[in-house]
Amino acid sequence: MDLDELILVSVDDHTVEPPDMFDGRVSAKYRDQAPRVVRQDDGAEVWLFDGRVIPNIGLNAVSGRPKEEYGIEPTAYDEMRPGCHDVDERIKDMNAGGVLASLCFPSFPGFSGRTLAAAADKDMAYDMIRAYNDWHLESWCGAHPGRLIPNVLPVLFDPELAATEVRRTAAMGCHSITFTENPATLGYPSIHDPSWDPLWTALCDEGVVLSIHLGSSGQLAITSADAPVDVMITLQPMNIAHAAADLVWSRVVKQFPDIRIALSEGGTGWIPYFLERIDRTYDMHRAWTGQDFGDLLPSDVFRRNFLTCFVTDQIGVDLRHHIGIDNIAWECDYPHSDSTWPASPEVVADAMRRVPDDEADKMTHANANRFYSFDPFAHRAREACTVGALRAEAAGHDVSIRAFDKGRFPRRGATTIQEVAAQATA
Image 1: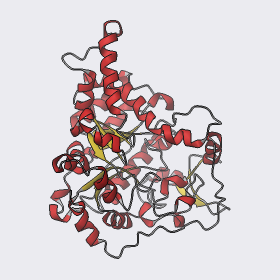
Image 2: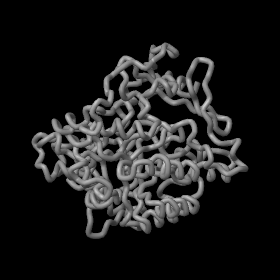
Image 3: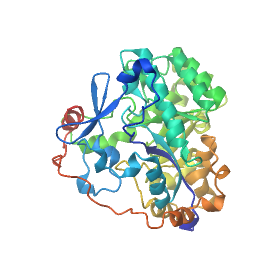
Image 4: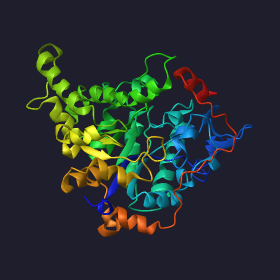
């Protein structure tokens, strides 16, 4: 494998929204209620919306910073790489990291847009969601065609409006919505409730992917409140396993067989056992649980409907045929703390050193392009899409690790889950 010839499409990165993103996009009647950024006395910059304070959590924007500065303390925009929130700088960082294209999840609205959806005034909330989606499609993805895969917010509080927004944004070229791994924990009907059928119908009609990011339910797998925070970080992928089980056994994949579901930031190494387990469960228990997949096994349905992804997951790469070579994609996770940027090509090449080129191509870009109906080669010649070509464009761009902390926040860090919750909501 020639590292410079790799083509990398990331199916999970993140946008730290710029402070002016709502300017000119909100209806006049709600202009004064639009989310806005303010600087606090301690120097942190936070979002204000609907009476709530939403901080920019530090771990969400640490690319380019030394590990000693990682933490969950709030940050200010001048403590982040500009590529976190400036789309032109993001493209420079992508080029320097050899990444052709990126699908970005939101930050301050929550991965499923739950912060906006929770507003008491639902008409206002709907206006803000539409404004966010217009910004994402026009100013973020639209600024550099062929480089950013559109991924919009859902309308969690109204499945009919959610379907309408899917159709509206699909007409603008969007083939992904971010969704929660468990709407029930947010106070909405569970995915098993038929009230969501208008949304599932719209997704299938328009060829739009249901992209489910871990943590989007507002809950993470934990053992106890006083457990070390390392426990929560270690168990994060288990949230995706929970969502996968919920969906595989749901009526959704049976009644909407064309639905496409992406499990984001959940890794892949757990999947071979998961597939073995669901098939065993089906064999042993379907007589009394009433499950019926016709001529298929649950593992067949998983491979038919789901896309999974990994940042660094050597076990998943080695077991790729037990997962499904057409069901695996790669992610960079920029600018989060798990990200491999700017050395992503080196990390990927090392993980795939024993993988045939055609299989590596599927995992690094082809599966993502197919699943998300995305064609970067319509905008750039293929030879200009490689790691080598992109890095040549970025010659001289600074990717050095450097401290951004100005001493505003104590870098003591949280050591237990209780402290993480307290600091995140302070």
